[in-house]
Length: 176
Image (tube, rainbow, N blue to C red; front, top):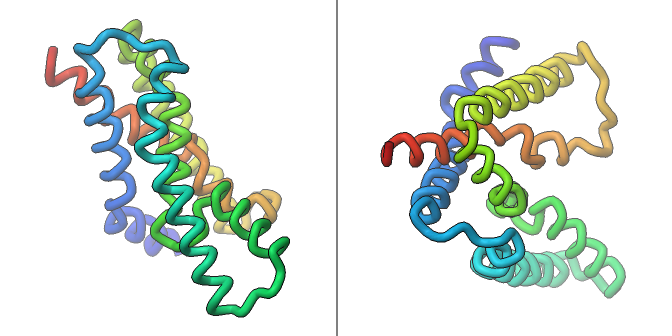
């Protein structure tokens, strides 16, 4: 029901809060530092999250292969590839592809925040609300979206964009 859907989002605050904190801390640590080129930023940040994500996904896929007695290397590597793309090697890894997407977007979001913070804030609010409404209508079977992209709908950055930018915006406003 609509009430159950809304209640679920009210009490399920951990991932949005994690994304807000991620945006806050990333901008807070970067705001007084010299602006890095996107490539330099990626080299600096992605090593911290990408390699642990790859390693743990590999370990979980290896563990699942052992438990399920997979005899095919092709199946293992296909599952590993899917797990790396969607964050499905184990249930708690799903937010890492979301954070990786924000790391990819961060240099441009930072520039926009410096130039026009209110416009960025409002644009991201609009995008996230629009995507959330579409997902809600999809869950109610009012609209149809391709099912094979089901994971993409909740693991792509537009769903979470507002939360990340909210953290960045808060870090900018605290400094003044």
